[in-house]
Length: 150
Image (tube, rainbow, N blue to C red; front, side):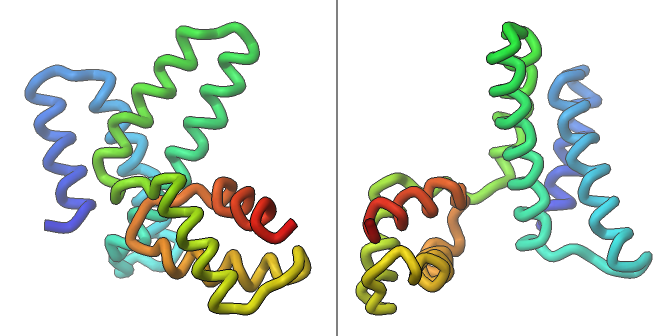
């Protein structure tokens, strides 16, 4: 079963169980996926990898919004964003740990022979390849590369 089918099935379950919060999050996710699909043409079907990228973007947007709400003193809205993240993360691969990120960065530095911050792009690219298949925050990888190369 593809991720899109899984989201659709979970939407139906949320409707049946009258879980309005989960339903609105899944509807929002499905709308974003349909928008992405329509960008590529009416007959285009998104792969699971493309679906994961869209969902990761939605999670990142929710994290940023939650941070903004918290800094603005709106804890109620921040909690709503965080609950949406919980729903969306169900469809994402497991997130890479800090140890896994550091190991991938170390291996990428050894593999590329990088010695200075000028080689950051090459190391980032190699590290992201090593972390493929996991949900990875590029900002964390960037920070790990910076600290290792400086």
